[in-house]
Image 1 (cartoon, rainbow, N blue to C red):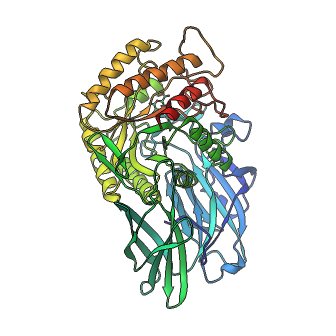
Image 2: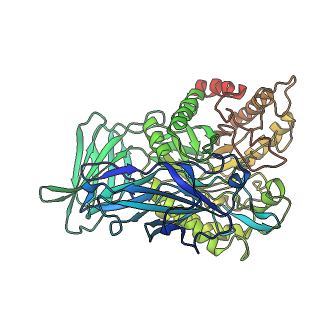
Image 3: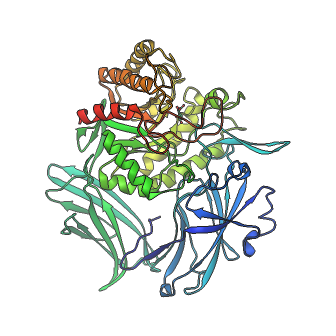
Length: 593
Ligand code: GCB
């Protein structure tokens, strides 16, 4: 599925602004067919945004179940004869969509796009009514998982991950046109050999099997540097300018479907020519060892929740650059495509993660789950049906992000159970699927602290070891000397496997403005000393090829006795003010590069 764009043959418009909105706590909307007319008793809600925090009532914030959205949009008259498509970049966690009275789409999964060809129901020049029902329930068969409980006071959502379960139309909604015969997919794979670069391309054309395809690669100055014809081919670039960390050099690949002299469809794709490889304990980009500095992040903002926002996107990248970060992980779900495009253009390196977080009842029962205990993988909990939904999420992630040069590593799950035969049985096919979908990038999962090197069973499936560790916070709390020696011993045990290690999380909750002498947990001083201790350990272990602090900014969580107005491990506050740790990181990361 190609991202909508304006081209010589395509047009798009965003369907945003204020939509009608109605919660459906009694789940009546489907039976009463709320899509059949104007949504009654509706409030107005901004799109894109989470709905949870824009109003002032707990019923909206804590709603469990269906929420209905509706708007009208006019199909441009000039689109007559074209294919008309309605696309949602992300609806969390699942959606059904109607155009007027016709159901046009259903989608499971809150962080990847879906679309519907609505040509048959959208007459050019006419207004259409778009109704979307958004469901936010998390169950054992969703990614991420959860449990919905019916209590005397209403339905409650239990979930096992440490960020607020925001819901809504989180990213742009598009109405766009393509020609009937159109490019429906493009895949590029790039390689470097000395000063020469190659771009292997493959396209799918729908509705025009007998039409020809031509490809032109243009450099950033606008000079055509290579041409080819056919649905697959290789473009060779002499004196190639590679994409590299810190320098997001992009070529433009223009693909045209042609019928003689007539251009039937045109689509252009930014292409960064770079390679990624794991060799021994090194992570190589363009054949050179790369060291990841940066953050685990969240799509999380006051009021907007997980709604995409260009202002904060640009600001967050500016702050990351200011600290000297060269990379980040899309913890704990695929981020907006705008974010990956920006990373491509600015030379940021991305670890791209699925929404599989919380597949671990050992943590669920203890740290975040309210003391209940369940087996993680069983016919009654995370089972074959869940795995199929997880597999589909991987398919949609790789399909969406395969052409981004910034993406160098797929992460199939964050902190899943990884110490049992059931976990190996669950994950083996998912690793195999990811490699089959994309043989060019390494694949890994993020290991959690209970799965020590002697107990973890998933490591042999992964190309890179990714560790979330909280020595000096959850373990050896307040005892940085003890933490340092335990952490060093553990890292050395991991290093013995001869794989690169990225520390994907290390962090300490810190209340901005809290100062102590000597440094004590929750103070800004402790966060700085905690990070410095970690850095001493990393610098002593050669196999460590990356450090991602948890977290870039403070973020919202569900309420709980472990959290004070959310998770406070941010290096920046939720409104992006620096804590002392930001300056300490800036000193380290700028001197390292
Ligand atoms: C983790 C999780 C992350 C949490 C973090 C914490 O290991 O991956 O989602 O927010 O710990 O702060 O406890």
